[in-house]
Structure formats: structure tokens, C-alpha cells
Image 1 (cartoon, one colour):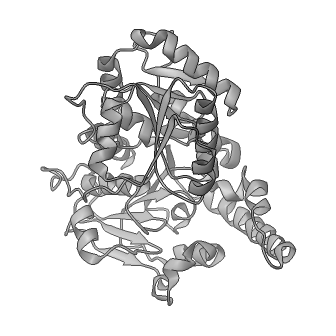
Image 2 (tube, rainbow, N blue to C red):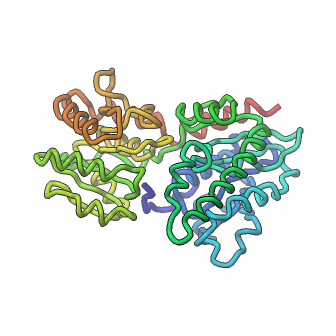
Image 3 (cartoon, helix red, strand yellow):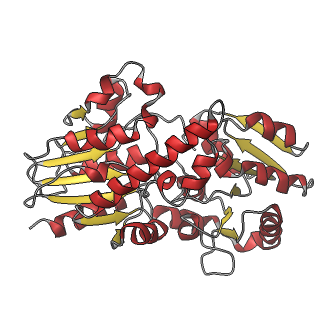
Length: 395
């Protein structure tokens, strides 16, 4: 879920360089808005004051970008950023972006640090430069989800558009594999993504979990209610429809749904009287909902998953899929310091079973354990681990 949050400035003391490189370049796919990947880039920038930020597209207002990344960082965009109305179609410029990312001249920088979910790792570096790539995920639409992605291409001339998409993905995969070998050291945001990096690129990756803003998500003073909460963008892969169906089968339990998106109308029509659709809510209200809920319910297969960590920072247990990133951030009931309950399959039956197990064992999950677990994913921890890793690689 992309919260509407205040733009946080660099933390006090960020002017002190944590990374030893004299001339550092940061490379990021694109900056259309401030979301999880941009918060990783922010913390990378905090480790390297004065570093240049190279990105294909930057749609942030100048003041917003300056406040978020710091006034000492210069943001350099590609020529594609100047195309008319490019905000509306930049994601379709995939092959053009492979050329544009290679066009960045980084020869004046000693250390290149990329933040990549598709393209940033493809920058060209020389033998005297260190390139460390923090990978959020190899591009899913080009690899393990390519068939699912192409199947969604429809409308007029759907067959032709799917043929074009297949050819585009094929060409991108060739480029992606070629550029994967030029990275000196890979970092992954979870063990789940490290396995994907090995599967696709046959490269080992060190895991450094991404920074979560646990400072804003804190326990509340109000008493907990009797409701559950889920929070995400209402798109198919988040499986909010499945969550609502599960609570339709448990009419004695209340669910509050935070978020908006293309599936809103369908989910609203499906929701029973025990399900309340809140839509988009202010950031402060998101925190309040987390603080007073019995548990967060989260059904997506995520690379990492920030929302479950934010909920735990509020002392709130999490009912989540026991696969992907959430299997690494939520300790299931039955283990020491449990912070939630896992379900094994993305089915209504599996989720209902997990909800039942939570209700039966709710008293065994302590808010204190949730808070301590969430603290291990904080921003300061990320800066320390990230800078130590990069420094160890600088000769």
C-alpha cells in the first residue's frame, strides 16, 4: 500500500558520510512518487551525502524531491523524462529505457550503488568502479509472471498487442541476463528475492532487509477494538477480495478495509454487513486503525511487505501468507516470540483456518514481541548494515 505520508527529511546526522567512497553515484529505475523503493533510495542517499542520483524519470516536484532526498543531492534524469505527457505512459517504454539507462555516463564516479526493480542494475561501469546493486526484485513481468502479465493484455487488437508484448519481454530478458553479469555485488531485500536472483541470474545475493519507518508507527493509547483490518491498494494480486470472502464466512467477526483501487467496486459489492470499506484514508488514520485492530490480515505474496511490519510496530499481530517476504517478517504462532499466524495457500479455506487459529491463540501473542520484531527492520539498522557492506567491498 502506498500511504499518503508526510515527506520526511534526512535524519539528523545524515551529513556524516557512512560510505567511504569519494565520488558516489546512486542509480534508481524511476521516481514517479514516494513509495517503498524510494524510501530505500532515501536511506542510501543518507549514507552518501552529496552523491548524484541518476534516474530514468523523476515526476516529483522540485521542492518535494529536495526535502525528501536532501538539498545536497543532484538528480539527473534521462532524455526520456522530457517526452510530452510521459507520466502517462513511461512504463511502456521498457526497451527504450534499457538504452537510456546505458546512456548515463558514470565514469567520474568511483562507487556506483543501484536500487533496481528492473533497469538500474544495467548501468555501464568500468573495471575500476565498484557496482553494488540492491535488488527489490528481478522484473516479475519479464520472468516468472510473464505469462500472467501477457494474459491481461486485451482490448482492441488484443492478439496483436499480446504478440508485441511477448517480443518485448523476450528482448528485455536477453538484455536483463547480459547486464546481470556486470554487477560486482548483489544485495536482496529478502531471502525470497535472493532465491529469485539465484534462479534467474545464478548470482549469490546478500540479504539486507529494507528500511521501515517504524518511528511513525507506534503503539496507541486507545483500547483495542474488536475488529480486524487490512490495508493495501485494491488490485488483484493483493487478494483483498479473498480476505473479504473469508470474513463473509465468519459474520461474527468484523473487518475494516483500508485502500482504494480498480477492484473497489467489485469488493464493495461482495462485502457482507460485517465488512466496512473505508477507502483511502489519511496517514494518521492508518496508524490509528493499526493501533486499535485485533490483527492485520495480509494475503499478498510480497517480495518483502512493509505493511505487516508497520502493523507490528504498533503492537498489532498479523495474519499473513507463510510464503514470500511475510514469512520472514512475521513469526507464526507456536514459535517463541510469536507475532502472528501464517496460512499456507492463497485460498479462502486456508485463510479462514488461519483466522480461526488466531482467535483460539490470540492471548499467546504479545504486543511487546510484535514491537521488538518490527524494530529489527528500522531505518537506522538499514543504514548501518548497508554502509558496512559497501565499505567492506571498497578496496
